[in-house]
Length: 354
Image 1: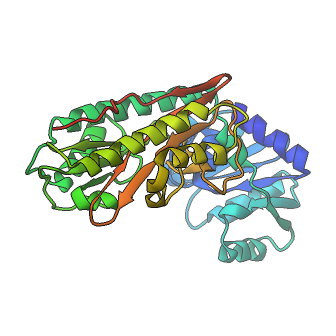
Image 2: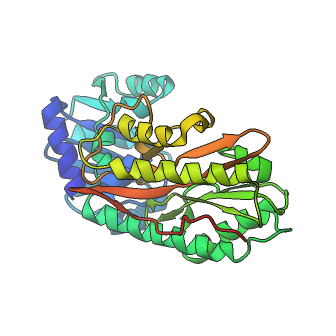
């Protein structure tokens, strides 16, 4: 229960007597619960997990001591059970996750708990979740290995006449067959549509001269991978090849400067400098934190205030997108180590033609 202890230490540091945790990924991170509905009340010395009767057996199997497990059933509600847990533990004041709570949800809390002091808490989970344990890193390695296997598999289908949609479906089928979920809906875009950074697969068929960008990831045992590769269909024009080479150079430049203590903005700048004038076609940040969700805490970008630290996992994904012509993105997942980085994704990046 290392994660629970880390949060309890944060409560002491921030002088928060109790915290209501309702954001489901934070609940899962704390408890190991894999269901879709749950909450935790945590104090510096105790922790209560709450869910409904649908998850009775599952919760008792997955959520272990020192958590106490509380199950409610209709007509009782989650807030009813929370109230009972607060009273049983003589809690009269608690914080809520302000960063994940809407104003309407806050109003309901105030109405439900008129005799309690309800106050917004700072984001305690974000900074903690950015730094992964060895177990979390190992699970991410396995998710990345599965993404690499998917790329190898789908490349066997890349040829003129195959549609973007067909490739997208095959990516999804591959992950499902391996017992994983999609980390996000796959992006498969070709030719002029490759200039859409988040374009959805269409019925457009691959044709000679295209670049094809495929962006996908697995959610395996609660942790995500995120891989992008761009390949060519036959011969491409010199300008299209130049775009690919600049994107690859940009990623290599960014990876070369990544180590503990380096600012996220510095990493982003290294990539843009390597693109030269084509940096004007790079309209998004260089990367993001990766973890229980594909866009986890932290950003690599020009305005980011984050600093690289040991145990963080980042995506590094420069791209050039020229409207009406083509686009290209290359992405890897990396973990920051004591002396640099470990690249977790290993699919080939050399310019490849099919």
